[in-house]
Each structure stands twice: as structure tokens, then as C-alpha cells.
Length: 75
Image (cartoon, rainbow, N blue to C red):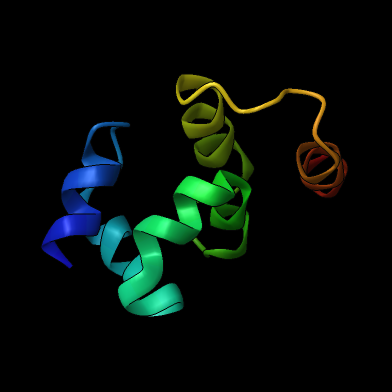
């Protein structure tokens, strides 16, 4: 939990919300979020905007299929 809290904290996500991510994805939380920040959209209390912030700050492709799908769900 400390590792995911530290990782997500860089993006302004609180330890409480990091715990939600850890509860959803377990010990592979960091790898899951690094590979697909939009997986955060599956976590109640975070959603698309949090995922978008991380994706943008880590240089994820803005025209990725995953981003487009999650943006449509968000809208």
C-alpha cells in the first residue's frame, strides 16, 4: 500500500484513494496503473479525470483506443 500511495501521491491522489486502488488491483496496482492509467476509471472515487491527469503527465497517447473508450463512458 505504501508503494502505490507514494506513486499516486506524485499525481495528487490521496492515500485514502490510493487504498481504494490497492483494494481493487492488489499488489500489482502500480504496474496496472503504469500500463493503463485509465484503469483508474474502474475505481469508485477516482474515475476518468484522475486517470486523464496521470496519463497526460506520464506521456500516454492521447488518441489511444483506451482513452477514447473511457472518455466516451465519462461523457
